[in-house]
Amino acid sequence: MAVTIETDHLKAVLNEKGAELASLKRKDNDIEYIWQADPAYWKRHAPVLFPIVGALKNGTYTYNGRTYQLPQHGFARDMDFELLEQKADAVSFRLQSNTKTKEMYPFDFELIIGYALGGDGLTVDYQVKNLASEAMYFSIGGHPAFNVPIDDGLDFTDYYLDPSPMKSRINLSLKDGLIDLDQRTLGQTNTTIALNHELFKNDALIYETKGLNSFTIRSDKSPHLVSVSFKNFPYVGFWSTYPQKSPFVCIEPWAGLADAFDTSGKLTEKLGIQKLAAYDTFHTKYAIVVK
Image (cartoon, rainbow, N blue to C red; front, side, top):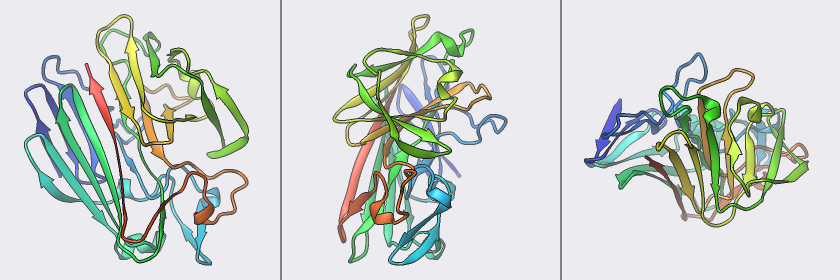
């Protein structure tokens, strides 16, 4: 089922399946900023990545001596969430551990995803609750895809990525879906990055982040833009398909990463893993601004 929230200026549509953002529009220009999941390119809009981000080596991990299988980016994006609370301009969804999740992931958890409209954008709020008496290990991230070009009559290459603050960040390379730590470099995010499809020929661009960050997709040929800002996500990914030239770009705040090539396979030692104490709550959020 789809849920619509709106203000005088904005309208958003959320799906209960995956608690996924499916549409975000300004009412003054009726521009759709969210990719509309054309399966000819990519069938998703903005999936929630949980309880892992990226791929596991060989699709498996071990915990307490047992081996588990998880698909890339985890299971939350394909599960039906419960509609927890709905207001005119905000909505929240809940997913709790169950028999099916425990076949893949042995922890007792509650995941609450909240969406709230305000000003020129949408805030996406993540709460992960550990419901058990032992520590919980997880990753979580966003994967929103934005239409590029934003404006009719413009081209993908008319746009660029504008980082803030403009400073160099550590770039993490992917090879066959895994992080190659030997190929870490200093990424040149101290300037704008012109968008072209070849940027994604080696999969996603991934950077380490610290503090407050924002990344904006804009064009000098248009006043319209989309920006993603966040503080408590240690990584960000940028992705589009290649060699297929898709008309979207994802800006992905992550609290987690794909496995490294030299992973031990133990969940407790996984690259970028978050550790949540017994009965504790992890809370973070990011914001999307559209103009």
